[in-house]
Length: 308
Image 1 (cartoon, one colour):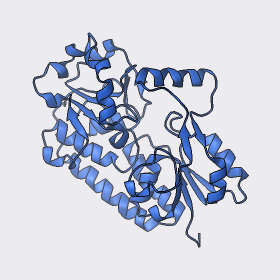
Image 2 (cartoon, rainbow, N blue to C red; image 1 turned 90 degrees about the vertical axis):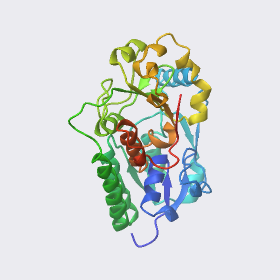
Image 3 (cartoon, rainbow, N blue to C red; image 1 turned 30 degrees about the vertical axis):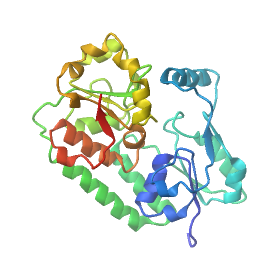
Image 4 (cartoon, helix red, strand yellow; image 1 turned 30 degrees about the horizontal axis):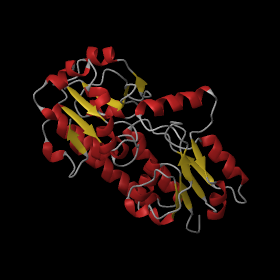
């Protein structure tokens, strides 16, 4: 590619990958959820979420109803603006229809443009896939060497944190709540991050999709640690709905809640740190290693977590 490619990102993690390899100057449009790093928020917004409700329960019900009715997307996309921007590359995904515009819609729009752009589809299910995505995006936008350097740096940070984990001592069982009402536990890359950090995540396997559990499942797992990191929620949003957990009959029976140490149950800004398969998963991993192994020096400064 001899000219500077014009890039549209319809996925927050892809935007973060693009910026991590030093190519944010190529970004000409973004999704409504692309908000990091903050300096890219001046780019045109090309998507919007359909009305799904306000509480966790309402959002879950809306998503289930949309799926039952055969809805192809939970988002709208500004086709006219995309045509005006004349992108050479569109970054998107089809890993989760709840998280972004659906791939089929993006491909349909791309095919109708005067000069069809390249659609780069990112579907990581592990942190190592995220490292590969840096290389994939770097190749697509003509910044392969910059991407390789960024990938090596992230990989080094990851493995340097692993050095603080004792593989011969079983770590605590971790209940990672990716949704509060109903209960969902983390999937995809999350179980792997917990296990590599020295914890156990028996309620879901590495690489599997996040899944719904019952309170009985949570109690049976006997978690010594709990992380509350609902998909798309910041700390304030978690706090506003925390009563759905703390007022339940089963919550006080969890071993982590019974512990006198308040650090055993934490809320984390999942929207920024765990839910997006981008470069900041390394920060999330370093937090996990520090939290599970009593190594606070590993936890990134100003990491968005607080005791419940």
